[in-house]
Length: 259
Image 1 (tube, rainbow, N blue to C red):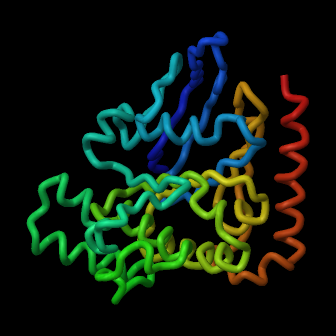
Image 2 (cartoon, one colour):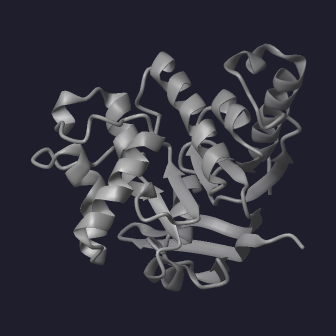
């Protein structure tokens, strides 16, 4: 039986502003299976991040039902069901990398020895072993973002939610981190929700690509990837990859006329 980790049933989300209501999401239906790598892609302002934040209990839907690991999002948050990676690393400059990675563990009351073991393990997972004693300003932007991912992994949640974490990085660094993230996903088997504006990134990383329309954000197409789990960067030159990227691009184009 397929294990549904995240389900959305007719989700609407409206923000009340001084200029009137802003309809961010409308009628969103989605299922994410255990172990899926799901990318959300669509034009700016289409509600990709809003949907991710709703899953993480950072925004509250105005209609519909969300379930995360069989719980409502707020209960899932309290149960530590997911880690969240923001667009910027958000590392405290006065704390070492180990101190930043271990901060959620301190807040959750993990014992010192357990914290140290977990920090060492996740720094190794993101290829930052040996950098725990450094400060954020001593690391490159890509390394800081890897530290942010390590922090989200530290308490070993089954789900990792990532809001365009590589968008501010140059293409070479982004490629390296895409490869590293795929390897981390294969090693851990975690379920990943990933927001991106990049078609090649979405196609390279995902088992499932969720295409969204302009606001109010609707899911206009869900594309299951036929690509193999093992994906070297040069897979992007293959006919299969190019055809999948074309399908995503067409889905985005169709979304502009969605009604």
